[in-house]
Length: 323
Image (cartoon, rainbow, N blue to C red; front, side, top):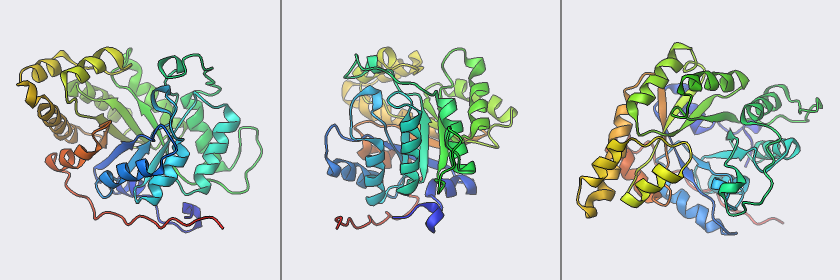
């Protein structure tokens, strides 16, 4: 496996965004254990349907297999990874080390974010590091890639090559500053952005109008976050327990308005309709589908939304034992 600078073709996500094709990303949550097969199973469900899949970094501040290891496993399973990297668990030395490792191992995309505070996870007494914030981490990755320089000022022998991504939440107050905040990340080096779950499409459209007006959409590809809510219990959990998610009451009324055995299907239909509406909003470059524990349903969601089957599944690369 080679990095892009060693002759590998451009990443599929990069190529889709460069061509102006409506891109699709999803997520692979690494297992709580040393189980490579768990990544293989999730990758098999997504292979051929998505341009890339985020490999989360101790999501929700819960200990999991590392995002770097998961990204390498996803590559071997034929799914292009987006390696998430959070500021929560690492100082600037470790962050730069992991960015170099991603480049050396051929990880074509990184997504840089602050990360959930440890108090929300399974080790609430753990010390949050947050040596850098997400904006500084984006700038660090861009400087490392484009200038070949560490934060210390020392040059690196070989620069990593990856597409740099960031996150944004259009619905978090004060909403008037969300496009401005994204603009700062783009100025720092972000080339694509994935957003928080979108359930309020009109509010998201207002955010995108400002993103377009400010010229941000011309410099950064915005992928709107979507996902199905498949039970009333999940609706209440997301509404009350998931930070940063804006869930309109209209979603609850719709899910409560169908028989109990139809709630899951109605949640999927709502997700499909949301994708269709998002595709019509100027500046939206794609969607990021988050379906935790329901990866098997992503192909159906994409097909019903008119995105179809973008390509034949990529063949997994053969695993070789180290000599």
